[in-house]
Amino acid sequence: MSQNSSMTPDISEHYKAILEGLGEDPQRDGLKDTPKRAAKAMAYLTRGYQQDLGDIVNGAVFESDNDEMVVVRDIELYSLCEHHLLPFIGKAHVAYLPNGKVLGLSKFARIVDMFARRLQIQENMTLEIAKAIEEVTGARGVAVVIEAKHMCMMMRGVEKQNSSMTTSVMRGDFRDSLPTREEFLRYISK
Image (cartoon, rainbow, N blue to C red):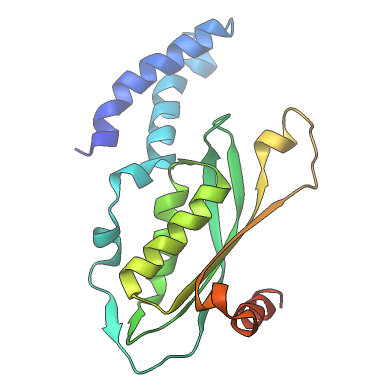
C-alpha cells in the first residue's frame, strides 16, 4: 500500500470535518461517501510526492550523436495551487540541447506530471522541471515554458475568466544564446 493510500482514511476524516464546518450533514445521501472520495481524489492529485525522478526516468537515457534542439510541445498539466488548493490547468513546452544523451519521449510528460502532481506555484514548478531535465540528460541547455489558467484567479478573488499565466526558465545555452532562445520560442509559438 502506498503512503498516499495509507493516509486516505485520515484525510477522509478531515474532509468530513470540513463538510461539518460548512454547515453540511456528511450523513445525508449525496455526501455519505464524499469524504472518502475526496480523500482518494486528493491522494491521486498529489501523487507526485510519492514519485522519484530516477524511477520516472527508469533508465530511458540513451547515447546519441544528436546535438540539435529537441522540443516537446503542449504537454498537458493539471496541478493544485499551494495557496488555495484550487486547480491550475495548462500546458508545458520543454526543449533541451543534447550533450551525448537523449531522453525517451514519454519521460518529458512523466517529469512534468511528477512536479504538477504536488501542491505548487507555477513559477517553482517551471524551474523544478528544467532542473530535472538538466540533471537527467546533462544537456547543454534546457528551456521550459508553462502556460496555465488558475482557478484561484477565475473562481474567487478577482474572478478574471480570460487571464492566464506564462512562466519560463532558460538554462545553459538557452539563457546564454539569444538565437537559441529565439529558435525555441519560434517552435512553441506555431
